[in-house]
Image (cartoon, rainbow, N blue to C red; front, side, top):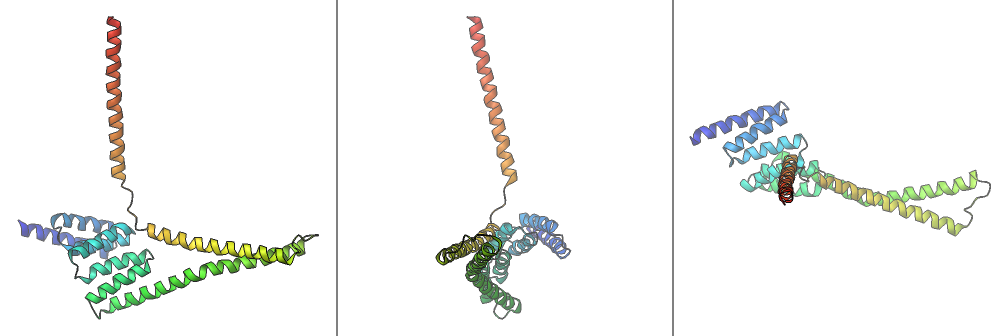
Length: 239
C-alpha cells in the first residue's frame, strides 16, 4: 500500500514538473499539494512548490515551503537556494546573500550558486549606496528649489520679498533639510513595503467562516429572545 502511495506521489510530482515547465504554475501547485498529502516527508515537493509559488508572486507561501524544505533536509543546498530566491525577489538582498552563501557552503564550487552569491552581493552593495545617497540627493534638490524660488522672487515680482541674505540662507537650508527628510522617508517607506511582501495573505475562508458563525449566533440569540418575549406575553395575558 505504501509503495502505491509513493508511486502515486511521484506521478503527481512529475505532472507538477511538466506544468511548471509549461508555465502552468497554479496547476503545478495543485499537483504538488496533492502529492504532499500522499507523501508529506518528500522535501523535494516543498522545494518545487516553493518555486511555483514564487513564479506567481506568492512570496509568503514560497518562503514557507522553502523553510519547510530546509527543516526536512538541512544539508540540501536547494532549500537555502529557494529561500534566497524568495528573499532576492523581495529585494532583501542582505538576507538573500546569507542564504545563497549557506547553499554554497553545502555545495562548494557550484557555478549557479557562485553567480547567485555575486549577484546578491552586488545588489546589496548598490542598495547600501542608494540608501546613503538618497537623502543627500533630496537635500541637493531642496537647495536647487530654494535657488529657483529666490530667482523667481527677484525676476517676476516688482518688490522682491527675499532681500535679506540671512533669510535667504535660512530658507534654502530649511528647504534642503525638508528634501533630506522626505528622501529618507521615501527610502524607509520602500523598505517597509518590501518587507510587507513576505506578510501572510488574508485568509478569506477563515474570515467567511467567522462571519457565518457570528450571523448564526445572532440568529440564535434573536430566536431565544423571541421565545422569552412570547412567554412574557403569555403570562401577562393569562394574568
